[in-house]
Amino acid sequence: MKDTFKHQGMRQQLVEVVRAKGITNEKVLKAIGTIPRHLFMDSSFLDHAYQDKAFPIAADQTISQPYTVAFQTELLNIKPGDQILEIGTGSGYQTAVLCLMGAKVFSIERQQELFRITSKFLPKLGYRPKKLIFGDGYKGMPEEAPFDGIIVTAGAPFVPKPLLSQLKIGGRLVIPVGVDVQTMTLFIRKGPKEFEQHEFGEFRFVPLLEDRN
Image 1 (spheres, rainbow, N blue to C red):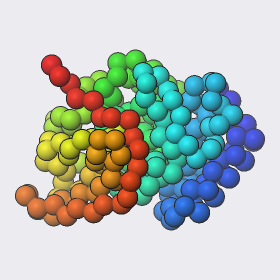
Image 2 (image 1 turned 90 degrees about the vertical axis):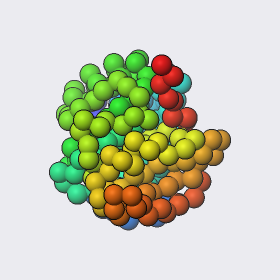
Image 3 (image 1 turned 180 degrees about the horizontal axis):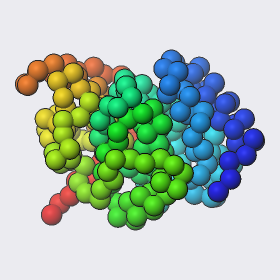
Image 4 (image 1 turned 120 degrees about the horizontal axis):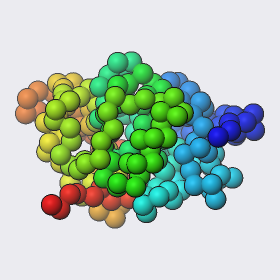
């Protein structure tokens, strides 16, 4: 697993692309510039690793577009030590971004194959989430709640109530809501039953799968 000067140079160009699209959080940009995204991808796409595009990974899933990763991460407003729940570990790229920014990351993956690959792979690169489980993201992780932030990396047809209930007061849920096209939505918990909602335009995600058992 190599990370060369060429890769590092390509990453810096990617940072400038993402910055030009409106990302201003320097810690987010630094994470995009630091993490070797090419190592998270299928080898047949390595030449494209630093383009601002989504690409296929195992189990019919995708590694999100870097701009989307940066956008969702910026909305979370992470401070070091924050407890963050990630729904959809996927390739682990978003997980690595959260870890690098100093978050305590708890992550759930619904696809057994991806879970197996990513749970071995992340520690090899030096990214150690607090907890990585195979399970149903719609249920969240009540035993570790409440969270400072929750990030959903797949398109949800509706907002799962357990996720809202697992936020701290002041906590933020970033979730793409919709069926074919998703609206990036931010919920900020203002009180036990009170949430502030903001919408940030359209994105495309693979669907968030629910456990049917």
